[in-house]
Amino acid sequence: QVQLVESGGGLVEPGGSLRLSCVASRRIGSIYVMGWYRQAPGTQREMVATITSRPSTNYADFVKGRFTISRDNAKNTVSLQMSNLKPEDTAVYYCGAGYDLGFSYWGQGTQVTVSS
Image (tube, rainbow, N blue to C red):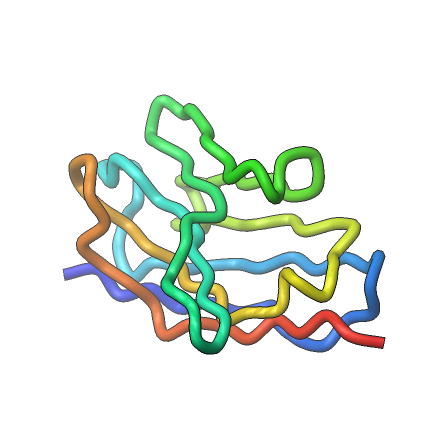
């Protein structure tokens, strides 16, 4: 079992920045993929960014150039630096992890609200 705890969400004005962090309950060096998904009210959960143990990254088109995902195996942490935030980025952001190609573990989520 891997427990994931997200932090860093909050209220920010359009154009602002936030940094989300996700701390795992065990060493993430052996975890193949970690990532961030988000879900806005009335919508399905969608992929934001993922990072593998290689590491290689993958981003949704709507965040390319604005968001950066990183992982620190020594701190068992994966982070998402979000810049130039837009109102449509408002959602609950979830951290996920998996030992293979799929995500088996999820955090409880952290709310991000972009509004003036």
